[in-house]
Amino acid sequence: MELPKLILASGSPRRSEILTSVGWEFTKDSADIDETELSGESPEDYVQRLAHEKASAVAQKYTDAIVLGADTTVVINHQIIGKPVDLTDAKRMLKMLSGNWHEVLTGVALVKIPDSKFQIPNPQSVVGIQSTRVKFAEMSEKEIEFLAEKGDPLDKAGAYAVQAQAALFIEGIEGDYWNVVGLPVSLVYGLIKQLSGNG
Image (cartoon, rainbow, N blue to C red; front, top):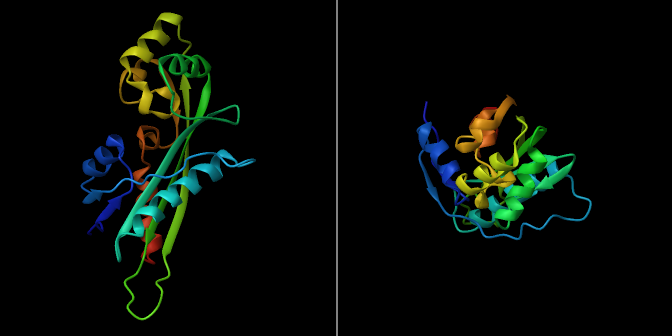
């Protein structure tokens, strides 16, 4: 079995590490898109739209390449919690997560623009979503401060990394662990099979 080479439309070190850990060959070309939520958009639609927009933006530069786009967000009480703007914001988010279950949603999109000399190429694309529930223990002010200051929260949805200091406070995970890290790689594999007609 051979995994097709991918172009990862993301600068996320976690996504790169996950693909590398399963032996997936890829190159990186991160997309710069507007990540503003649309009015009335559900969190599920939001992450899938962003994943597709990222993959589509990068796919314009390549023909016959499979481009992978992904977008992860944290949702608590139906409210999207993105990346914190500063440490105060990170502490606010962690306070919301303390003692509660929340949902980690990742939209995944694959886009391939076929090489066609005779007509305008018709992009092929597949989009999917993964949801994982995560439960944080009750955290004291000191613990929230520790996690905000030591956990490098500013580039992470929900202000935490499950595989780093936050692991001290996580009581339960229901669903795909790799989704919480940043890329549900089994979903990516399933979508690859779908794109190539083997799904």
